[in-house]
Image (tube, rainbow, N blue to C red; front, side, top):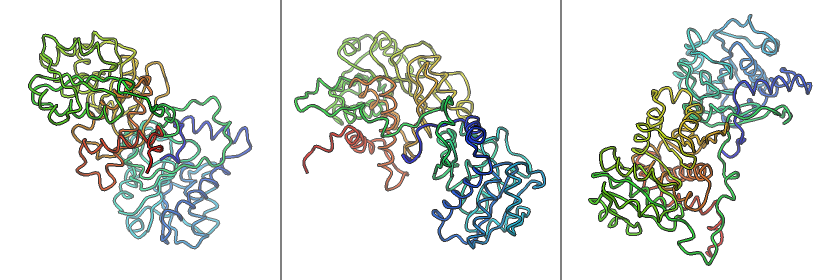
Length: 503
C-alpha cells in the first residue's frame, strides 16, 4: 500500500479541505465532482476491463453525485448503465442535483433498486454514502446495502464503502463489502483499521489535483507506517562489530506448561538482531527451551530469586509471554517492575498491570483488543468501536507507548496526539504465538538502542511485513515460527545489510 499517502485524515477535515478548495482556489464542488467521477470511471475500466454492464447505486448527497458523473461517462463510452437510488432524487441539492440533471440530459434514467439489475451487472458501483454517515443505516438504505452485498457482483466503492465509519473503521449496522475503494482528496483513517480493511478491499487514492495548501493547519488523525519513514532507524552493521554491540534482551515468561511463548519471543529477538538473548523461565522449562533453541541462554528462576541478577545484565526486557498470573508469574512481575530498563509488556503481563495499574515513560504495552479492554475496564466492543481513542487512552493512563494490535495495528505514544498506523499484515497472523514473536522483535529493537516509539512502529511493520511474505502461499495454516526467516529478511532489507553480501 505504499502508493497511498502517509497522512490519514478524519472526515470533517477532508470536508473542510473540500470547502477550502472551492472558497480559496475557485474550484467549486461541481469541478471536483466531475474530477471524482472521471477518475472513478478510469479505475472502473482499469480494474474491470471486461465489464460492459454496470449498475451505479446513488445516494442523496455528493457521493451520489460522483456516481451520476461516472454513470454519464460510462454511458458515453458505450457501456450499458443502470442507475438506481433508494431515495427521492427530487430532493437532491447543489452539485449532486446538477450531476443528476446532466445524467438525465444525456438520456439516462433513475430506477428503483432491483436485485435482478444488480445480479445482471458485471460491476456494481457503490455511490450511496460518503464520509458524513454517523448513525446506523436503516430502512431502504440498509436494504440497498444488503442487496449490493447479496448480489455476488464485484463492487467499486466511491470514497468509502457505504456504512463504514470514516474515522474509526466501525460498521454502522451494515456496510457494503467492496472489492475496490477509491478514496478522494484525503485518505480516511477508518479505511485502514478495525473493519475498514475488510470492507474496503483494494484501497486506491486520488487527491483530485487539489492544492496541497488546503490542508494547512489541518492535522492528520494518524500517520501510516511506511518503509520510507522507517529508513534510517537501523544502520548498517560495522565490520568490526561483536555481539555485545547489539544489545542483551531478557525474556521473562514460561509458566509450567507454557514454554513455547517464551521460546518464540526469544528466537524472534535474535531474528530481529539482538546480540544476546536470555530467557528467564520456570525451572521445568529451561532444559526444554535450550534443547529446542540452543542459541538462547535459558535460566531457571523461582519465586524466591534469581531474576534480579539477570535484569542487571540486560539492556531491554520483555515480560508476559506464557508468564501466567499465579504465584510464580506474579513474583516475577513484581521483581521486573523494580528495574528502570526499557520494557515490553505483553499477554499476562498486561493482565497483571490491569490489576495493579502504574505509569512508566519507557515501556511499550502491546495489547490485543481483549487485553486493551482489561486495561481500560471496558468491553472489547468499545475498544473496536474507536481503536484510535482506545490506544490514546491507554497511553495517557499508563504512559509510554501503546501498540494496539489487530487489523490496522496502532502505535500511540503518551502526549503525542498523532498515532502511527500499520496497514500491513493479514489474517494468517491470527495464530497462537504470533504476538510473542512481535514482543521479542520489539524488545530486540529496544536493546539495539531505538527509542520506544521507533522500536514499536518498526517492530509492528516488520512483523506484519514478515506475515505478508509468509502468507504468499496462503494465510490458512501459517505458524508463528514461519515468521522468523522473513522477519530477518525484512529488517536486513530495510537496513541495507542484505545488499552488501556478495552473491
